[in-house]
Length: 164
Ligand SMILES: *[C@@H]1O[C@H](CO)[C@@H](O)[C@H](O)[C@H]1NC(C)=O
Ligand SMILES: *[C@@H]1O[C@H](CO)[C@@H](O)[C@H](O)[C@H]1NC(C)=O
Image 1 (cartoon, rainbow, N blue to C red):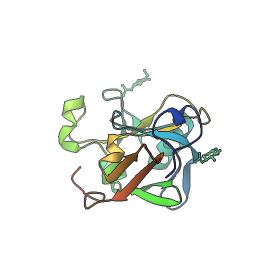
Image 2 (cartoon, rainbow, N blue to C red; image 1 turned 30 degrees about the vertical axis):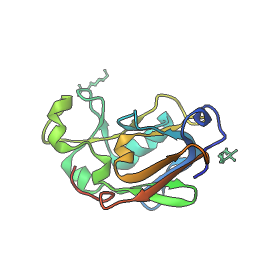
Image 3 (spheres, protein in one colour; image 1 turned 90 degrees about the vertical axis):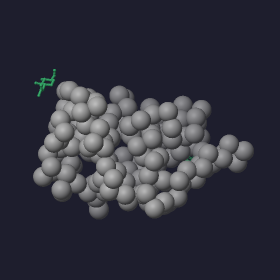
């Protein structure tokens, strides 16, 4: 994908991307954001998070600061599709959750399911409407090509891992 020309995302490894939940629920129309190994969660604009929260039925969990699902809701969770330069990258239900073995390490309950998608704190249209952080990047092989001003992604054997 070429780096985005939209500022301020263009000051980083910024790209244009849209996000869809399941087959047809739009979470974020094509907009600029960044790819960042220094961010743990996958962050989206406040209005996009509202759409994601409605689609998943998640509630805000005060103990962890993350969205929380019941195990029954998790069983119905659908994939999130990140469309980058015309290609869909699928973040499976398992990829959208915090590793359950680490729930208690962040103050959570061992029997709950927490989501790694969270708020960037500002509404869509600010020129930096998402951050594809490590929770996204650990599912894809990624190449940061500064010389050619582009970022590359590819699936790996771990893209659809159910390790979480
Ligand atoms: C990214 O989106 C912006 C805003 O729609 C557009 O101007 C730009 O041409 C797109 N592509 C790149 C590579 O920046
Ligand atoms: C979480 O925090 C909000 C805002 O302070 C509060 O209204 C709500 O009751 C809290 N929920 C729980 C489960 O403690």
